[in-house]
Image 1 (cartoon, rainbow, N blue to C red):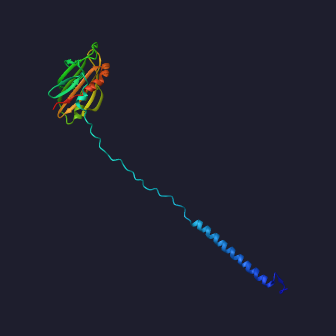
Image 2: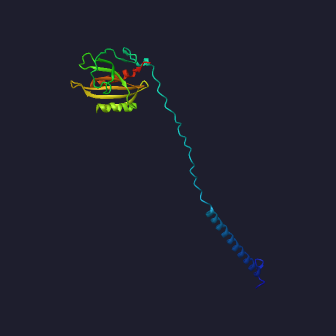
Image 3: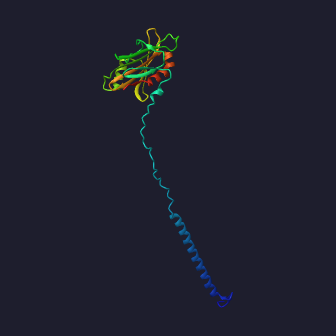
Length: 233
């Protein structure tokens, strides 16, 4: 039996061959297991892809620039055709034609103190209007530590008659714009537009007074007239 051959080989030879084949299969399994295990380990060892760090963004702040001072308009362009000049050694300004000299009979002369009235004229909205329009220019010395303090003192002394108060420029000349409300002796509601201008140590008042409805109809005319006010040097 031991010498009987199968496929040209003895039983002993076939046994050795089978053992070698089993050993080879065992080695193949071991190698495969190691390769698969290493692959899994490699996969597990691969670190997660890091999220990109947020980088600082360069913020360019706008360059601060100073606001250029307003350029005054040529004085001649402020004067409407047909208007009349009123001039003294100290100032000049313009009004529509038709005003005549008059005593100041309006709501406030200056700001309640006793300024020097340098000009007082009277006109009318229409030839048939029963109401009168008054325009006054007055001045007085500035007696407080500051212009704001001076105005506050004057306005407080007047009581609650100021309906508007704002800072404006009259063709680049700084001024305080005030609107006063009140009534005349005939119970006519009136408004008075006052521009207060500081020139050195002198406070100037340019005032326009009219019946309430006529005041608002003429407001743009009053404001245009005030822009022509300037000191004579």
